[in-house]
Length: 77
Image (tube, rainbow, N blue to C red; front, side, top):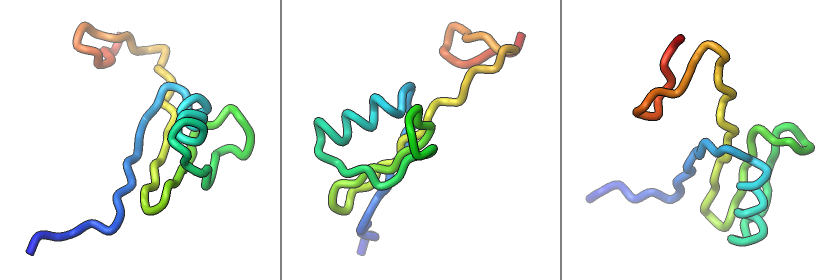
């Protein structure tokens, strides 16, 4: 018998946690469970709708010693 998941929590890296949080809350109807820090601008948030939980993480700032390459990955300078 295949394993059956009772829950699954995607951990998403987003460009703007505040904007993503508003989308999940205001458009999709999720509730905000936790934010880090407690006030905006946020770097992390947890939203929930029933058994569905989503983690929203801010993208790490780019190092001054890297530059984007043609394939979208950073290349050291």
